Length: 127
Image 1: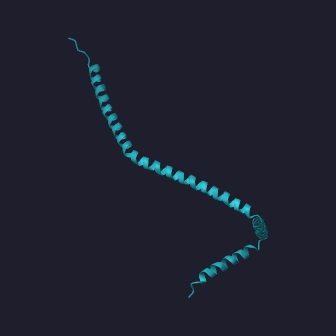
Image 2: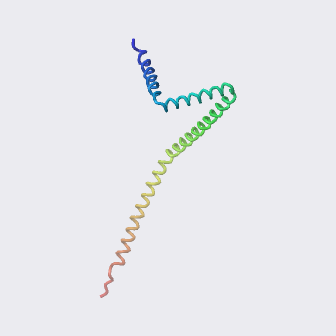
Image 3: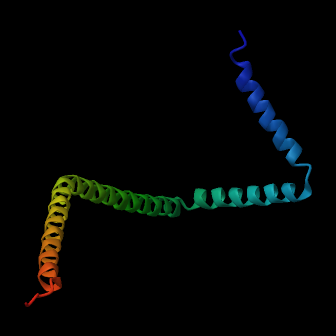
């Protein structure tokens, strides 16, 4: 009860909107022009099915090439992500080791400069 009304009203609304939009002259002319082009294309391909078949095959080949390219790109990205996952712990360890080495060197340089500063700044006292 009432299940089919929604779809019916949607279709009626679409038809009413299309009819109302045809009140505009430019819209009517555009719809007429497009309709004539579509009819002429249908007529042409009905008389030349080999051309239609060739066009469909070309489109299929283009879509297949795009799919293959996207598939290859996706596989490349997946490989790179996996490699990055394996390298991230190694890089983290390398960065930590490097940081520790710099901190140790910094401390050593400070002690060297401090020791050197103490020996050079002490005045020699002669009596």
